[in-house]
Image (cartoon, rainbow, N blue to C red):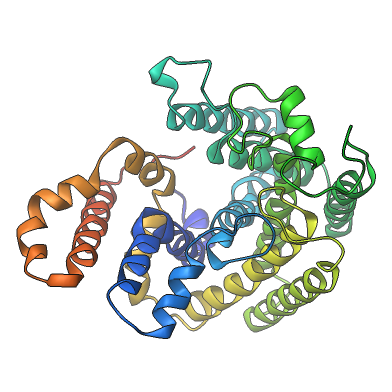
Length: 368
């Protein structure tokens, strides 16, 4: 890694990615278990937030996936634009972003059970596949546009065009604008074109249309990353722009949600606006605290997770960290009464983090 790359790396970005992944690898389980052992209203409220809404609406847990995609977009100016500025051939970068998308699609199939060889029930869509393909779309837009205005036009075009498809294009037997699991155009297209089993039976929350829509929040991240790389604004001004942008998107989503609902499983444009807005605000806070004010000691725990995010996502699917925690800490946990499950989850999180710390100390990172 060159000194230029080192200087451009944002500790806040690695920290925010690790913070986001923390809720996937067990942070959600910890707070749900804690709520069962205490009567604190805040604990019960947050435990409820650690579940996806069934369809329409929004909980904090619904932010986890789009925030990760936003973060992957923030990295685009650092990973791609910087190379273009140094004269790296576009063909080389094209090859890498396409390769990245293919690998993530394949890893997604592995996560879904590819090695079971039961292809009739294998789910074709996946979280990793959506990340890879949405990143590919956003990266291609960034590579083939030179100005902020042009990228903003692409972003608006995706959001408006996607909304028009969902609200104005009729689905056989249901008509237009039927934003239900059975009547939404997302499910209609998935049933026609998406191979494999659909997660929601009539639709897939990581289906074909959702991938296109999700490229919008990835592109939002790329715009945020370009702002952070800019030499024309002082850090405090960058933070302010991120905050104002985030607040504006949140307000816009709230105003539109009355006639165009916020639905994660259909990845509506209002869902993009809301989660994009929150992501901008979180990026502003993490950037200001970590990279501007330099309060960095507390970040190490999350950075260890964030630097190997895909690794731990796959690892918790392959390895049974919970069972290992039960084996080593079951006796101790049994002495804690109602907190037994909480202790075991803490043990699981500790094992996962130590696994990642082992990789970190040996400079082993799965870079896709």
